[in-house]
Image (cartoon, rainbow, N blue to C red; front, side, top):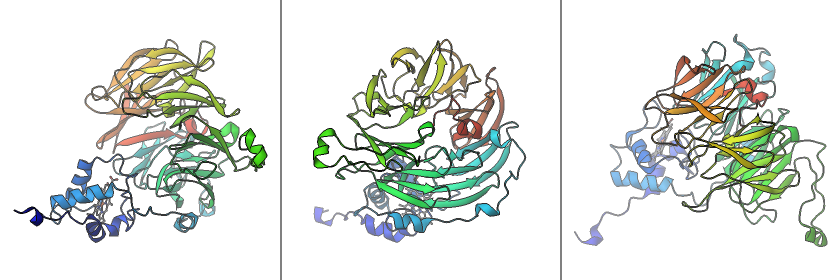
Length: 508
Ligand code: HEC
């Protein structure tokens, strides 16, 4: 066959508009189906995308196209959905406001739980397998309710201070406010097209959303009415950044924000009495740029050498401890301590591999406070003295892990090795006094991860992190299994009391 007669490359744009746009949106920003943007598909391997398109997804609305589309057409569609949309889709304040719905006004609802269990010992379990949320009674370990969530919840759900309402953030930018006592969605809004996580202020009056797309932060009141938004850019407005994470810093009455692409850490105070911000460097005075701006809801920037990825706080919320991603595949990650008051880096952390500081926890040890964090690449858990920022121990584990948890009432800290191909089925139980591993808990051949304690610390709950998974309840002292509830890939579980009191064994 002459080369000129070769079949032309399939027109992916046309195929998309014909077969996919009705559900995934003309701009690929989602509709009845999820958004299909490079940012959204980061974790979906091309082979898995191809299989999804050819075979569909059982028990969902995603149809199979294997009979209608040729293999090269499907391959072209997969390449197409991994390319950025040109021009970039917009999502401005008017779009955010127009997306809000409020199906159940709070005033019409009961002010007591409509179910009987301790509302403070409730577990909210996010099931990623089929996009549902289960509520589990933390005393009897029985299911109270199960309801559908938005597609792909991202980051932990966040509670109001009295524990009645929970906010969920989804990959595609939806924030859902849910009334746990009435089992009802109260309000929803789409904060962005691709969102990383949300934070709720300690007074329960604000919700902040961290977006990758567009590159913005968006602030809402407790009923999800937009209050304002910020472009995530350097002060001169020249460089825009994806926002990697936002967390509430309760004692500071502020949100602290990590940026993916610019070397800045932001703090935005929700305290009406916040001191004014004197931005800019000394030499800017001559240019008149150092004029104070209001501290309340103003951006206080800490300039860094490199962008800080995920981070967590010391118990006093004076420091943010964060990791910097390696610049190359072979490069080393670094970790740093940023003092939020003097607004600069004060120490490097001696951590090898790729510390997952977002899951770090702290506890009292020999008259000081230590920090322990799992490691996404390295073997073992590094323990650091928070007074000197020097290493104290490396606790051996069978492989790299993702989560770590403890409870003030428990002598043990638990961690997983879910990033390890050979030890993903093993949890390591660490004695917090001796800093030694004392036991392992296994679920042979499965993936066992994400631990959370009951309110009293007497039970530890872990996930069989698979589609036909389960929630396993262990006695936190004897490490014996007490009960198991089947669940569809329970990616996270959150105890209301431990979250609203910021219990010392939990990360944010
Ligand atoms: C009738 C509606 C509908 C149509 C038409 C449709 N989809 Fe989907 N699609 C969905 C739904 C709903 C899901 C989510 C399934 C789930 O819950 O896992 C989905 C999921 C997907 C996913 C997985 C996304 C992820 O984040 O894992 C891909 C990829 C995808 N669709 C591609 C396509 C392509 C390409 C077309 C056109 C050839 C198409 N879809 C047509 C409804 C649809």
